[in-house]
Image (cartoon, rainbow, N blue to C red; front, side, top):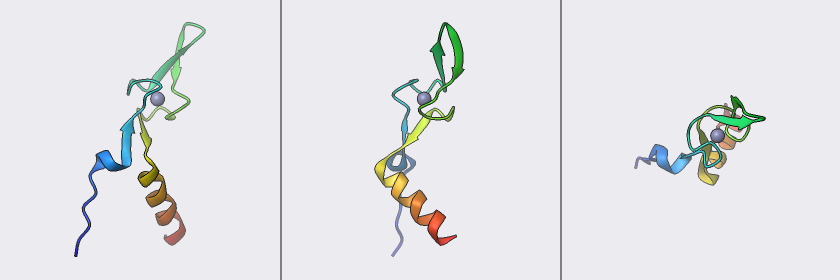
Length: 57
Ligand SMILES: [Zn+2]
């Protein structure tokens, strides 16, 4: 049995920067602090898996 997980299940477009990877602070464009400049954030499932892999590798 194989488990197929779509990327959409693991990551969401960052709602803070809308996937722009940047936010504007004091009228300056800086790396989005919420997604760390990735433009995406992990879902609960993504975090669970990440935690699992960190523990087992
Ligand atoms: Zn962001």
